[in-house]
Amino acid sequence: MKVIKTENHIIMTSEITDPKYICISECKKVWWDSDIHIDASILETPICPMCGGPLRAASKEDYECLN
Image 1 (cartoon, rainbow, N blue to C red):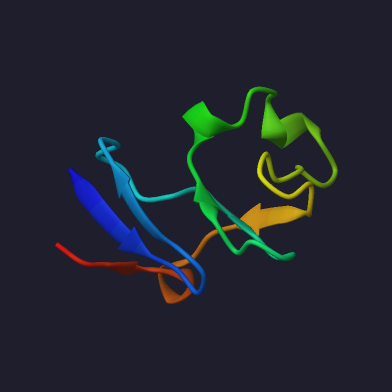
Image 2: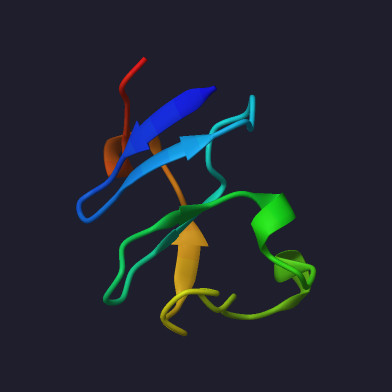
């Protein structure tokens, strides 16, 4: 289990990979490919499933692994 901390969230996940996307709008939540139910690579701007804001590729500076 991974514990990921972002600006607005602490997320516990069974994912073994790092998050692939981060919301750059209101919620600032990170997402994995399995969370995005449409192939985000075909979209010009993928959409956040939580707040509807735009997503961008996540980098290590966007979140902290707590474990």
